[in-house]
Image (cartoon, rainbow over all chains, first blue to last red; front, side, top):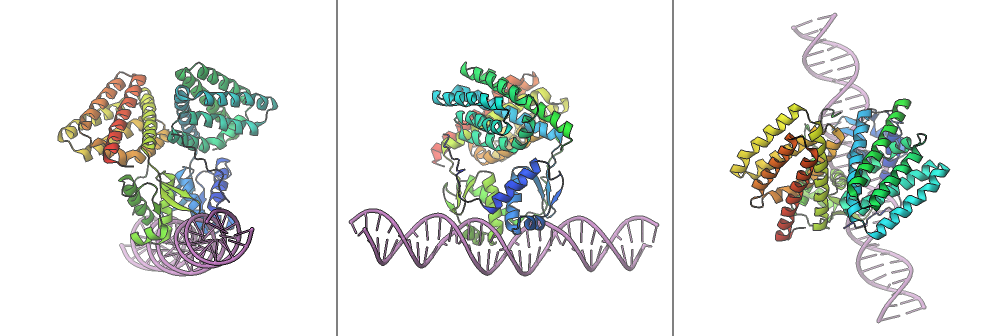
Length: 226
Length: 226
DNA sequence: AGGCTGCTTTGTGTATGCAAAAGCAAAGCC
DNA sequence: GGCTTTGCTTTTGCATACACAAAGCAGCCT
């Protein structure tokens, strides 16, 4: 189980991957409006590449749901309505809740110790109010829980879906006080884990994620994004 | 929410899609051994096409996790160890359990009525012992539940992951008595839904899926697949 | 005048060519 | 004799070229 395959140490970045990441960032950041047509030749020119890697990037984005390909009718940025974003957050919340429940029952003492260490490290970050650092920590925290489920497939799915929402989460974190509250919620989750109460940890994780979603919705409505 | 779905109404089949489906079938059926190298030129020759659509097909399969692409090192059929398949089934079981819980609390009377109708229709299929028909019904049954969550994103995710395991499920269904038991388990789930007890429905759904997984594991071990 | 039809244009789908990187193997060196 | 290095082969990654389908437009017919 959990064969850790993260080959994030991969060699030189492939052109198609660079284009994919660039487009993903722009879509998530709202620079590319929903429904906007993505012309392959145009993008190829913009990235100084040919259509081939652009096509691959677009297909991968389609697999991730960020764009929609209509056969012979071009690619458009997927619609990201507030409803859809809330749906996504609810889904993530449920998956995270599921993961933490399984993780509570299955994690090894070593894993628990690492998680505690990780959680402790976030205190300093919150004090500094370093959003970027907290974002990085947050990712590590949640991924540690995924892996602690000892179900590598589930962990992969959770990471994939987490990544899809990452851009939105970053926006949400910058709401005032959200860092403090986020950490406090983590604290509550950690306590439930320590008590070995997976159901409680699960409910707290769900609440944690839904709080984040609510913060994000406020952010979106305030900024008229999406 | 649940914006109407899905243009599954594909127009004329694209060559790359045909290749993707063909390869997906072969991989799921075990005709292509795990770890086997998939040479682009070779496949292109086999399908009487060029490398371009083959490449696209392989990328899509990679996105679905059926193959693994190692940059500049070729594409291989993803390893499907029994452990990994069990991980996949557990994940699906948890997601299905989550879906049925949400669905129980959110489904409209109309949706509930449709689901009951659907379930009732399976009795005749089981009597005939028609595996193919039951497979089709089963898919419809579970998808009805996904949609009843009124979370279109979650429904899409569930369908996608369900599709990934579809081939394995078909194999599992052909275990003797499995049709009967499957329907009986559906019956129990339906009852919990009727009572509005989402938690109970959830637990029963999880048990249902894990039973299927166990049946599959026996099948795999018996046939020395994967 | 309005709708239909055929053409044009735009852009995707597919084919092919080229170059660079990874793997392999053999030969040379210590 | 073992290890390293270098060149060769294989195969991918990217570029370019071509074909065809779909949307837009204009002219014609009704």
